[in-house]
Image (tube, rainbow, N blue to C red; front, side, top):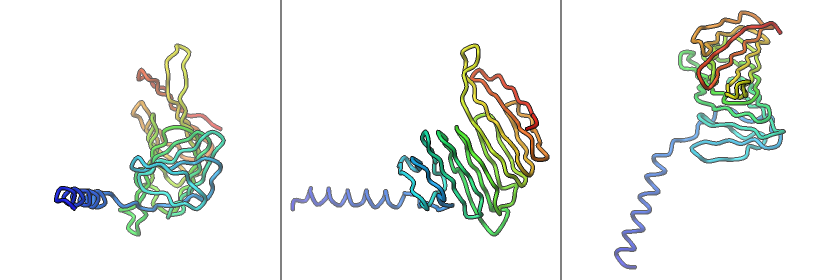
Length: 204
């Protein structure tokens, strides 16, 4: 074998070793308890089709296609269901015996969702949407994030938060915190692409 070929092989091997060393390990945070039709997981630009009981990971994007759905159960027994045409990023989920180190942060980008909080301290939960940030205080709730076309032809994102049990604090696009203190309330936040904002609380 010629010296240049040996050198090339060595460099390739070193490159593979460096890639492996730099690759962040996947951190399991829960698994898929229900999978209906096509549910995808994407992490580090690598996509996969989820099957029943598959693990899900920190910083993974979970998405469903039309007619599809899934329910994820996390290490602290938080339950999160995604309906059809939904997408959500599992930004940071840490289940630690030390409450100060626990965290459950997700970003719901579109679709319909239902949460049942688990054993983490309630202040550990934060859910982001394009037009609102939601803090939880012991809660069962549903969430809808949908793009809409306005009468003037513009576009907007509508976040609809429906509280079934518990309480929640939500900061909408007006930057003002709205506290929902009991079940049976709904907050609707509409933020247009031009920056206009409307938010209102209603009874179910």
